[in-house]
Every structure is written in C-alpha cells, then in structure tokens.
Image (cartoon, rainbow, N blue to C red; front, side, top):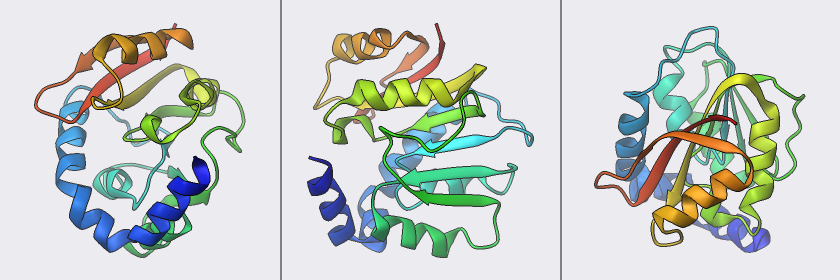
Length: 179
C-alpha cells in the first residue's frame, strides 16, 4: 500500500496537489489552530506534510518546524515553497520516525491515517516522539472511519481526545494528549 501511495503522490505532483486539496486543508487548519496555542519555542512535527501547506501556514509565526513525508515529489514542491523558513523537510516513513523520544511539543498528522496500512503504528510513533505534555492533532477521513472507529483507533494507542471536531469537513479532527 505504501508504494502505491508514494507513487500516486509523486505522479500527482505538488502543484496539482495544492490546487486540488489546499482549500479543504485550510478549513482543517482553521478549525484546529483556533483551538490550540502554539509558542515560538515549540518544536513542531508535521507527519505526512505533503507539500508543506501546514508548515507554510504556521512557519512565519513559529520557530523550528519539521515536516516528514514519504513522497519525494511532494517534498520537492514543499522545499520550493518553504525556502527561507526554519522548516526541515525529511523523506521518511511515519511508521518509523527518525527522531528521539519525547522531542516535540506539537505533532500533527492531518490527512495521513487513511493512507497507512497500519495506522496504529504511526500513531504509536507520533505518541513516542511527543513530549509528555505535547498536543497531538490528528485527522481521520470520514469515508474511511466512523466517528466511533476513529475514536477507538486513538484509544487503542492510549491517545485521549480532548476535542473532536467534524464540522463540515471531510475529516474528523482530534486534539489529543497522551493518556
């Protein structure tokens, strides 16, 4: 499944990805960014960062951010957009994160879980690299998960959803803490 996802996103290309998905992604960002606070000192990780839409959105007001994606094509487009920012972009698999434990203050995984054969693995990795008091913001595609299935998935890796939003979006959005 991962090879097909990588190939599909590489073939789609960054420009077309942004044209096709940026409006929906921006609605998700608006929904959760209005509910959390981000400090300039926060170390932020965006899993499945794609073309860097979230990093582009928050990089001006933030300190150091890290984006990780499995698609070389999308990361290449993200690099071109994020030049001059404090964003590091890494080609890697969300199931095997190359970071030390408890490193990040905020971890985002927006529009990622439905693309993974074992989403619990990536959620466990996200939780492991998040600091004890970190906020973890996730989305789950409604076409893939019912609300109950999405919450059960989070609970299965001991992530506590403090808030779940599903207002006029294609995804459920969860703001979580380590349980």
